[in-house]
Length: 428
Image (cartoon, rainbow, N blue to C red; front, side, top):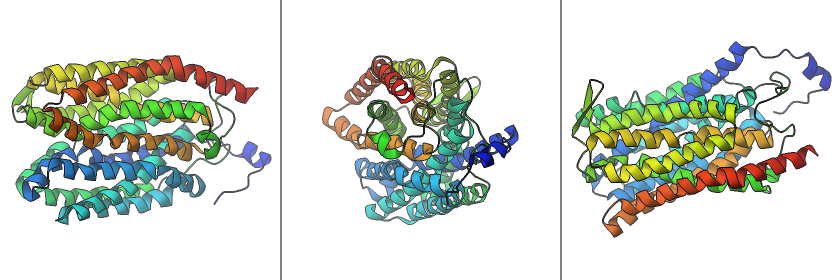
C-alpha cells in the first residue's frame, strides 16, 4: 500500500547504494530473460503446429496476435497495481501464469485452447515486462535510457541461448515437449527472482541536479498523460516502427521457408549453421544489444536524435532485406540489421515517456504507451493475408520500410518541438 512520507522522512532516508540499484536492475533483467521465448521463440513453433494439425499459418499466427494484445493492452491496469503495491507480488504471480501458458500450449489440440494459452501467457508477460521496465526507470533517473535498454535487452536477447536447444528439442521430442519443459523452467525462475524485487522508497533515488536530457520535476497522472499531445505523437510513432519489427519477428521462419533458404548452411567467422537458425541466433543478440546501446546514446545526444538515426536505419534495412533475402548470407546479415535498428524502441520510448511525465506513475504511464505494441500486432496477420493476395512479400516489406522512414522524420519535426513546448509550459 502507499505510505505517507513527510519531508523530514525523505531528507533523512539514506540514498540507495549503487550495488542496491544495480542489483534491482539485474533481478528485473533475469525476469525479462525468462519470458523472452514467449515472443521470440514463437516462430519456431508455427510450422510444427501446422504440420500436426493443418490449421493454416494465418490461424496459428492469431495466437501470436492474442499474446501480444494481452501482453500490451492490459499493462496500464497492471502498471497501476505495480505502482501501488510494488513489483514483488505482481511479478511472482505472473511467473506462475507464464508457466501455465506453455503447459496449455503443450496439450492444445484445438485453436481455442491454443488461443487460451496465448492469452494467459500475454497477461503474465505483460506484468513481468511492465514491472521490470518500470522499476528500472524509477531506480535510474540519471541513466534512464541505459537502464531501460538493459532491462529491455533481457527480453530482446533472452532467447538467444535457447533458440538452438528449443529447435533441437522440437526436432527430437516434438514441439509439445519443448513447450512443457521450457515453460515450467522459465516460470519457476521468475517466481524465485521476483521475490527479491522492490521499488525505491521516496528519497532513495533523488532526481539528478543537471541531467543531460531534460526531465520534468512534476509527476503526471495517467489521465493527464492521455490528454497530452506528446503522448499521442509517441503512440503513432511506436505503432509505425513496431509494425515492421513485429512482422519480422513473427514471420521470419515462414519468410525463410518461402524463399527456400531456411536450411541452407551459412558460415560466418568460422561458425556454420542453417540460415534460419543463424539468423534467429544473431537477431536475438543484436536485438538485445541495440536496446542498451541506443538507450545509452540517447542519454548522450537526446531521445529524438537517436530515434531519427535508428528508425531511418530500420527502414533502409527492411527495404534491403526485400531485395537480397534470396541470398542466405545476406538474409542472415540484413535480418540482423533490421532487428538491431528495431529493438531500441523498447528503451527510447519508456525513457522519453518518463522524462516527460515523471517517475511516480512511470509503470502506469509507460504501460499506456506500450499498448501501441498491441495495436501494431493487429497488423501482423495482415502480413500473411497481403502476401497470399499479392503472391509475394514485396508489399509487406515496402509498407514496413515506409512507416519507419516516416517515424524517423516525425521524431525531429513533430515530437521534439511538441515535447519541448509541453515541458516548458509545465515549468512556467
